[in-house]
Length: 236
Image (tube, rainbow, N blue to C red; front, side):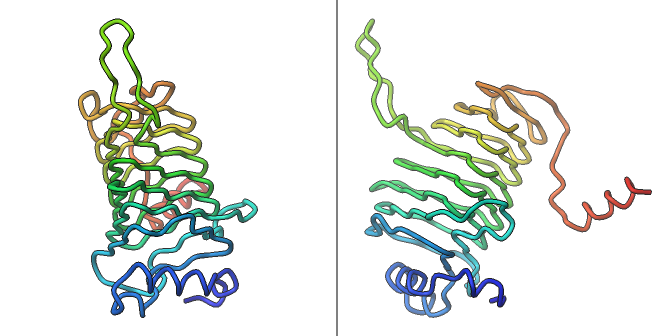
């Protein structure tokens, strides 16, 4: 762990959470670390980590790369969270899984500050997917809806499945029923609420309220070295 990280490290919450939620052989390595102030509303659920275990591989509440005042992280875990690799979750985020709900993170995810992830059913975030700050992922409407014409009930929950290498723009709302292909870019302030794999292909940009296709054959550059090479070419 870097020295700069130690100054932001919440030791008591980190030790308590790891040894309560993980098998001893995993917990002793402290793979999950909490930064700054964290509230445990409920941690009666479970946590699973798949793959090689490393100290600090799951960072919750980090604001090192965020130009924002650090806020409380909130963990409300009555269901299950599965981590499939390293992940960085920014400060002020909410992770809430209701009983029987599952939130699954891929490897190398980055979740921006003040993001809310609330599940009553199933949320799956693909590998290398980036979610920018102040975004919300809700797989529930929180209430049932009644069709007054035929008395049918509209279900309040629906799966959210984000593909690999997605880039979700800041302040977007990812609602129940959202499914995206790999390499999808969601523009800032968008509202997503359906299965986009039926309408778009990989390497597409969607955006708006509700979100619709904006452009094709566009991907985000994830490789840092490639970004540096591009910048050098632009400067020249």
